[in-house]
Image (cartoon, rainbow, N blue to C red):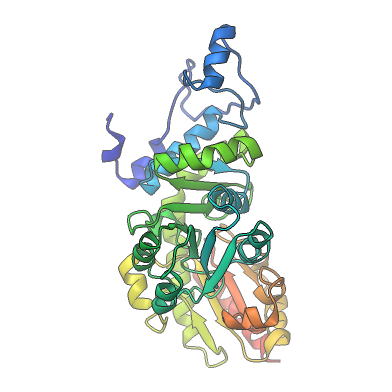
Length: 396
């Protein structure tokens, strides 16, 4: 098998990017080194001139990191990938490498708190014009993109309310405005949504989430076409240093081997729990793209092949009820992480989205009673029993 483009996803997850050393190891090698040596001074000169393709410095590239990058690129269907130290490093670098003073960025309002901070607080410092739109409102996108822009940015599904954006439609509008569309695909994972195939130009991940999936290592990734990665992203990446460590890359490489199996189990469990929660009279609303009650359920079926591991619910009684719910859980852990083998829960208004103003949180539906569940790999019946106890406690 030499044409890797013919491999199916499960094969790519196990075999993609495999480049054995002279020792012919079965598992991927870990090159835990910072630098590399040259045969002679002329080769070093040629390497820095870009005339020969060799590893120079692990801030630029590393064999273990390259394995992770190639494997993820094959899975995503991207020309190229660059791994970063964290998911936020991926978002920041992918955004900043494209914009200059006087440029314009249009973004969905429904963003993770740190992503919102980059767009709303950091970019304006450097003279970049920002416009937020309601991500689910195509008319708002059309109006905002009736004049030129440089970048458009969105999450779908969004954190934490799981709103979906029509990626193909926004991609078309972005390109007409001269913008590249950048999609944060963390919640959908590369198993369930292909933004590049829908017209997006750049995909970013926090590999810390489902890709690692076991709460061990931080990491991120930026994927796109070769021209963007080499000509636009790479100079920024090399000179600002948000690179992934070789050890973390090795962990991510091994995690990719089980990504499909884990995400499928996550999703079965999440669907079971979402359906159970929706029948509860003591829950104001349940958000899960796989439920017919989800406002973008039809879009979810059209652009996703699975509905993911996140379930968001709103409790009557606001923050006090939400805190009683979290504190009563015995099996599910309180944590702001997600996509882990262990089920996790957080209160977005006081954690992941606490830096937003009350008005900004209200605008995207993050009320004091909202709770985000990241459903893990435990037996769903044990999770349901734990949630049932916590709901009784939340009612007071």
